[in-house]
Length: 409
Image: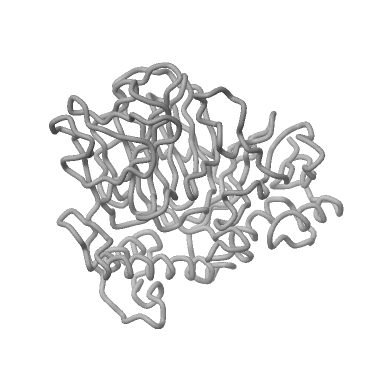
């Protein structure tokens, strides 16, 4: 396999009702390995690492010809990497080594000019797993002494600050309403995912007061069991971010065309979380799915949907989606459509089909979930759920990690 760096392609011309229209997709014949755009540049073509045996086009540069774990990059390949990847360094080594340092030592916790750093998953692991035949290239326990760990700590401190500000302003909504102590529950999530017994001393920024941990609160559900209404509910409060949504016959229905996002305004106590919706009705040419790690304000986060016998995985920034993977699936309804983000591993499942993208570091702090739909009235769902992966989720958990472990610490 050959690996190339080059831009995303903007989807257009797929027909009026294809969800790829208006989103960033991969070049023909390529498979996405890693999105190397900083968070601040997710709405432009930027650059990504692609896998393809043939050159996708003149704007794509070769950075590895063979196994990225063992094959040494040549001088021209190192120059290609250094010239195209934000923060890239022209030094000897393998593509594996360049990826690891890009996601650790050279990462930008703010996501302004480089990608954000890796953060540990709920198993306490820092991980990069490629779904391109190369297998897993990094899987080690998170340690404060690791190269680049300071950048991960910086990222998690930024998350703590954000959650604390939201909690103090009344914007963090727990099971009993506004939760002014949500940041203290996040400390528990950080302790569990890192194994650090004193998270108060590590993840609270130095200019903020030291506070103790509190237990987490993990699950919100929505039944849609109410009289027909143009306002979603009744169990949760919803924001219709785009499209038009109703409850009809105790189910949720999307009425608008094109992209429709509805966000449940309920927060979970950790940034490793999942969203799930039962797809009840989905006629040909329509799409429905769920979202997770969503922002409380912008249309930022991750999601999945089913469309014409294919399960799609995506990220979204400012309402603009980027395709992260897909796989053929067997359509059968009703069935739950599930998506989760665990550390930097994004995964979705539907009716026995699973799609994974690992790593992805675009969004690091979202605590809400929701629903995504494409096209209109023959799209209906039921029984929504959003929950913290650290708790005891009642929905399916498709996080499988089937790769062969290499270099486990």
